[in-house]
Length: 467
Image (cartoon, rainbow, N blue to C red):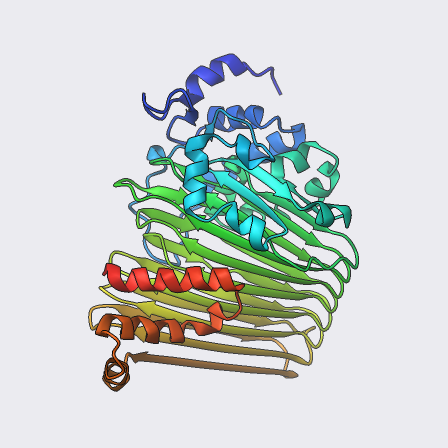
């Protein structure tokens, strides 16, 4: 490859957010070009293989069509999206050293209070970069690695990153996976050694604060043989009158007889296009558990996938989606059975009000090799008015007659009798309806740590009040 003129690229690729923020933030110009990708690669100090990976992903992105599944994303114009925004301050491991304006944002969200009270480690990402990362000393001494992706990529875990990075979600998967491969930035790398059980969760929190920007964090977690981990992901963004984009990627590797629970509470703003891709692979006896709460974004494509490669592996997905005014949330889960005697369970709840559209998609594939496998899908929808819409689109592909598969779907509305009963006990009508909706979403909230279940119930209450 010819020598790269980075000084010229910097002049072409950089632009400031605005005059008020100029002293504190860098921002790439809107759009997506080879010059921007190369500038990003240089900014991240990528090894050669990652720079080439980004360029190949860009070429794939340019060739692939926009997916024809899910809601229309005509309002998303990549020419108006900045691919990279970062604070001029570096990542720190002491909360006191985080810039005051960024610190105030996260403290309003409960970070780092949650770290002190209930977490084994915390990573906080602001726009395109992590600004804070820390892990408890006793957890680190057990051999658990929890760091940012850039440090893992260029440090002692570089070989492990190269072996696993975008192998589960290749850039050819779909257009926005290719986009992610080209401009990914930030995210978390976790490795849990053989036999280590992390008794309290690790958490990463992602805040997209910049107007008209994209966030493309990459999360890579490897839970080695016989190990156990609960990882929590939180997401939020302020509301702007222009489109923002989230196209992150999550890759989870669950080794033999290991267990990973991956919990997400997403509270993106209503101008966000959430086009995220999440996938896990389980070896023999491995267990992956997804717990998902989706409350934000203008439009979403979100279908966490589990590949049950090893015999006797197991996957569960428990999720709730709340679509309000101006939202079209297309969510679900995929289960791919390859090993013998594998099992999966999907339990989802979708809620819609004020004209919101909620679409649930499930895909269960049982290969010829997956004899003795079992799969169960249970989805329920709650419509809070007559102008909203809820659809269920299940797909089942079974290649062996030695499998047990079931599917159940229900749709309903809040019972006037239930509201009347609660009101007769001194509860207002709005509170009564919020309580019923919270009860409907209980399968998700009961699987979360107490403080996160409380956060989810507060989000439901706000959605009920927001219209």
